[in-house]
Image (spheres, rainbow, N blue to C red):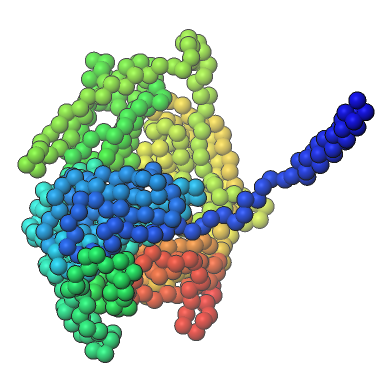
Length: 637
């Protein structure tokens, strides 16, 4: 009995001590660090058959990695060149990627499997970028390449992926519309592309942002790029071009290793890698042809209404996919008493939208308005024909209101927007008056303008006019005096909208900005071969445009301090606008260039820059103060 008790008394303290130590340990624990984050992409351990095999005659590929893969977007990323009519089946078995072929391989062809961003580890999503598995069903591996870079033609930005670069052995213009390519590559997120493992031949090249993943240019909104000529892919020809360019001499050009005329069947990956060392040691220029290509979307011929609504009783809004042509017309059909005189049109600046204002409150009170539209479309033979569309606009008040409530909510006075920019007005701009609805009349006798040289207000002679380009604006043109202070007064009834609502008394004072607050850009351009549109942008908004017909210096004065981007458009058809391309006509989009750097304009400074046309196909770099060759900037005033 005593022995049993001693044992018990010994066990209890030990249990308490262990519990204390565990509790103490738990209390001191923090969030586990887990060690440094894994940033290493998956590594290929082995391939079966070996990568870069010749005499390939199996129906599957097995690629084993050092970790498990995430197969989330694998099938979208995998690109096989030449493309297969039946897409291979892809599956994972533990850490091995298995690709089964669903069709018989072509004879004497080098196949390239490019995995894009599809190979990434399961846990950290680290990507093994653009891993390629290559094999040949013949005696050798073709190893020529077409490489290059893609940019959007309109602004030289990088196109959004996925984009496919496709090569055709047939040189007919129709092949991108009717046939899948013989070789295909992809562009990366930087716009760079490579179509590898090509045999010597002459190819047509076509770039496609494929909207339905069928390798055919068969959707009108698909972005494309093409070359005007075919490509001669030939190693000896590449070397000849390099020698003629003067960039390299004959000592740089190593023996022709463009074809691996060796049977690699049964060789290990390491042995094949050693065999390919000569290719890897060569500069890419020695076995690749480089091209820059510019993507665009063809102008849609068929007009359609992309959206329409009636957010307010008096306002019918329509948006179109392309600008309206002269063939466009409209007419009211519901209610029957509605006539053209009851409709006031307001077209958008680009003429791709139309707002119809209902001419009076009686018409606007109608819950349902029907409008018939007529515009030009094209049939399957590209022949124009007129199409009729009927739009029904229904308005329902958001809450139940009787006529008395509606009358109480009618505006008592017209809101007129005048001077902005904290009372500072640009010396070269008209003074504008903007109202929310179309303007019906202005009464010049109810406008007054004063200049205030000191404390005395001196009347100024002027004439307010309706803006012929904007139905909701009036303006005053005047030769403003630098740094002078002005006062504008609008008395009741100065402006009236089409619903008979007029303004209350409105008084605003403003000051003309001094010339010292403006800067100027003097741009000298050389090597001008086309009519140029020179455009200045600030915060993506075009603020100035000028036309250049030859070399010289073009000045842009009275610029507010800001960062400006200068864009050049080669206006080859002299229509004053940038024009997109048309593939079937072989017409490229009009060329675009930018000044190499954005310009940061300072107040009271004259900024000088020189640009040689054709010297830059890059978007501009970050802003800097561009000045004269001597490193100085010249005071403007």
